[in-house]
Amino acid sequence: MTIPATAAPAQGAAPAAAAITLKGVSKTFPGGMRALEGVDLTVPAGEFVAILGPSGCGKSTLLRIVADLMEADPGGSVEVDTPKELGVVFQTSNLLPWLTVEGNLTLGARLRGVPKADIAARVGPMLETLGLESFARKHPHELSGGMRQRAALGQTLICRPKTVLLDEPFGALDALTRDRLNVELLRLWQDLRQTVLLVTHSIPEAVFLADRVIVMSGRPGAIAEDLRIDIPRPRDPAETRALPEFTEAAQHLRKLMGVV
Image 1 (cartoon, rainbow, N blue to C red):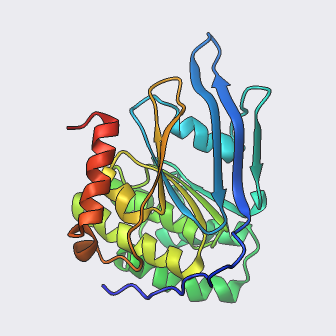
Image 2: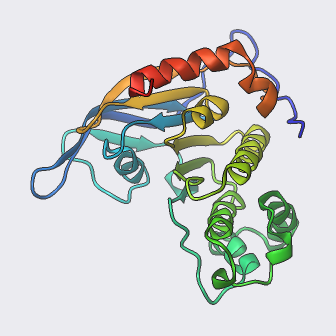
Image 3: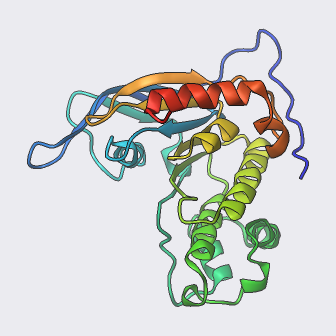
């Protein structure tokens, strides 16, 4: 698949405004378990940022705090530029069992008041992108777990939110489907230039998709490194993974993560 190129910003252009700003964000759960410790993070509008870290380091907690689904400890601050135009995809799908795939796919857009004509124009291409065009009239119980997760991803992306939070959305998918959706997610991002914050356990996925990779320390989670991925876009899967820059970044992240 060929991904269309996106024009680079003009030299000397003003930096993009921050879409997400975290300052001194910590989280302590009842019982004293401290999940996050003093996280500072700025994500400019239109940037794709991946978050890596060991299990239990607070990655999903951080995402829920950004989504305003969980409160941080007093003293820190969380600012999201367009909180009403934010979409979240969780690790497990939350499809309504009485709606078809198409009904679930368009539910969020209908609730947000997206014009019917726009929804109708988007649903066909989204079903094709997700590989669900033959399952549009099926219900969730008739789908595999991977298909349900693809539908949940499409439910968010079809709304075209300005900021997208992805909490390990591809973890339940087989490798081929995961690779395909990586490419499609990148294509959609390059078309729409949404701000994306992705939690993943996959180092190759993070390097392939992201402009920056944030590496979290063990609990309580703090930012151990903020690595910029200097790999040209557009990124073709085979060509990108063959680049020395890809190998170098992946090896560096493996060392940070203790995967050697």
